Length: 154
Image 1 (spheres, rainbow, N blue to C red):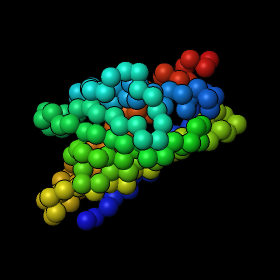
Image 2: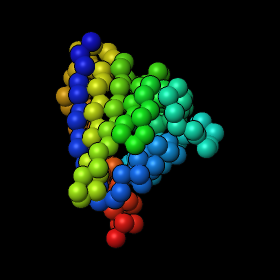
Image 3: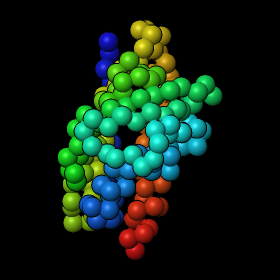
């Protein structure tokens, strides 16, 4: 199984407690996810974020609805949390969200380690579509987060 890594660092002009609070509410994921993914949380709100929390949702990939279940495996406010896919489109998905106060606000780092099913076909799909799509998703998140959190701080 080939494991890929996406590492994205984002400077946010807002206080650490506000940024961590925003990301520790799974309900906010729909705000920062591109509309084309049709993100929909199935777990009833409010969702209490802590180690052991299960979150069920659906997304659309190429227009096909898929169920995804995540488990919060680490939760250390306001420094970091980790979600891991239990069921979903990837063979493996481990996403570490880290937060650090800096002079200009918060440095947020996302490290996603993931694997694609279907062997060589999955590696080919990663090369031509999946890698680029994940980068687009995280770029979209950055823009939305800057508009939501940094704009409120001014």
